[in-house]
Amino acid sequence: MSSLRRTITTRAMLLLAAIGLLATATSLGLVTYEMNKFLDAQLQEIAVNVGPGDRKDAGPLLESEDEDQLVVRIWDRSGELVHRAGPAIDIPWQPVPGLSNVTAGGQDWRIYRWSHAQHDVQIAQTWSARHEIALHAATGAALPLLLAIPLVGAVLGWSIKRTMGGLQRLSAEIGRRSVDAQEPLRPVGVPAEVAPLIVAIDKLVDRHRSALEAQRRFVADAAHELRTPLAALQIQTENLIAADLPGQTRELADELRDGVRRASYLASQLLEMARTEGASLQKRDDVDLAALATSLLADFHPLAEARNIQLAMTADAPCTIQGDRDAIGKLIGILLDNAIRYSEAGGSVELGIVDDGKTCALEIVDDGPGIPEESMPFIYDRFFRAVPQSVEGTGLGLAIAKSAADRQGFTLTHRNRNGATGIIARIGFGNTVAPTP
Image (cartoon, rainbow, N blue to C red):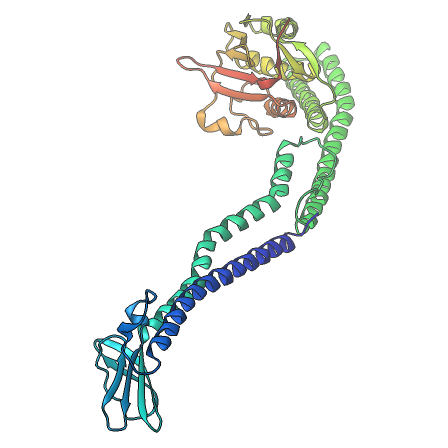
C-alpha cells in the first residue's frame, strides 16, 4: 500500500529535477555557443588591431556580425589619430578615463578609454552584443521550462491516475457488491491515506447491517407471534358466525371475521417481507419459465374463477432462466394475485413470456383501473396503495416483489396500458437467460 502524498511528491520532485537539468544543459549550450562566437570575434579584433597598420592588409578573417566588432581609435599625444579599426562610426572622445556609456550612430555603446605616455586609446562595443548574450541565456533557461509545462501536466496526470487506479477498482468492486455481501472491503492497491476511510466505511456498513438485521428479526418475530392468536381468533370468529345469531349481530360478526382475516393476511405479508429482505440468494436453478408459469396459473385458477376472471398464457418460445425457483414463483405469484384482485369481475388476466433470443421477460396484463401516473414512483414503497381502497390489500405486495427481483438481479417495472385500462407488470431477466436445448 503506497502513500498518495509520498508517491506524487516523489514523482513531482524527480520530474522537476529532470526539467532543471534540461534547462541547465540547454542554457549552457546556448550561452556557450553565443559566448564562443562573441569571444572568437573579440580575439580576432584584438589580433587585427594590435599595433599600427591597416586591417585590410590582414589575411582571411572570421565571419562576424557588425555588432560584435569593436570600434578602436588610437591618438598620439599631439591629438592626431594614428589608428582606427572597426565600423566607421564617429564616437566622440571621452574626457574621463575608464568605462562610460555613449550613444552614437543610432546605437548605444559601452566605451573604455585608456591613456599612457605615447598614446590615448578608446575602444567601444555595442550594448546590443551584450544584450544578445543575455537574451540567449534567458531563452536557454526559459524555453525548457515553457516546453515542460504540458509535460509536467501529463506526467502528474498519469501519476495521479495510476495512483488513484486502486480507488477506481475499489469503486467498481463496491458497485458490483450484493446487498447480502458479508466480507469487508479490501484496501488493496489504494493509497495509504484512503485506507482508514475504507475501514470506517466497513464499520459503518456493519453497524447498518446489524440495525437492519435487528429490525428484520423484530418484524419476523412479531409477525410470527401474531399468527397463532390471529388463527385462533379466526377459528373462534368462524364458530361464532356458525351459531344462530340475530341479523345485526351477524353483521357485526361478519365484519369481525373480515377484520381478523385482513390482520392475518397482514401478519403473513410482514413475515414474508422479513424473510424476503433478510434472505440471501443461496442457489441458482435452471428454471423453465413456461412450466413454472403454467403451474402458478393452475394454483390461482380458483381465485380467478371466484371473481369470474379469465386467465390466459402466451409464450414466444421455451425459455430457461437462472435463479431461485421458489423466490421466482413467489415473485410471479404476487403479481398474479394483484392482477386478479384488481381486475373487474368478468375481466381477463394474460401472462406472456417474451424471448428475443438474448433476453427473456415475463409480462402480466390486467384490465383493472390502472395506477395514476403521479403515484407510479411510489408503488414499491411499503404500505403505499394507489388503487381503489375498496379492494383488500396491505400495500406490501409490490415492496416484497421488488425486493425479491432486486436480490436476484431481475428488473421489475409497471406501466399503464396504452389505449385501454389496466396495468402491464414486467419482469426482465436480463443476462440470466440460458438457451433451452
